Length: 90
Image (cartoon, rainbow, N blue to C red; front, side):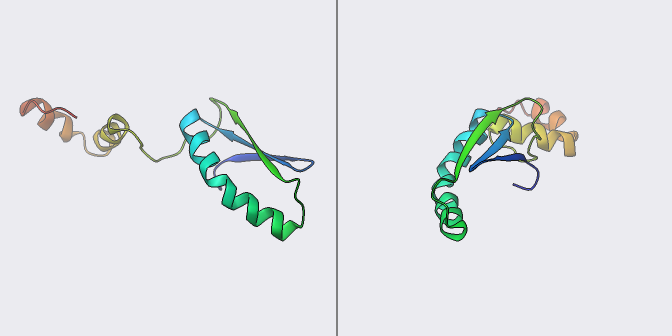
């Protein structure tokens, strides 16, 4: 989460995320984080809110097969030639 921007307003932690996939992943993990924060801050009003923004930092992680392929091609351009030569699909 260090690469994400955040804003604290009253008891709401506002997280800026690059897309709805990241938002859903964060929401699934939020229960454990909220329980921890609420217990250690002794504040049951702590919540998270999410804002999808194209200006949010984009993760270097690849999630879909296409993203994984593009990441590999950017690192190893010869992969594209092999894919075409052997008529491979993703």
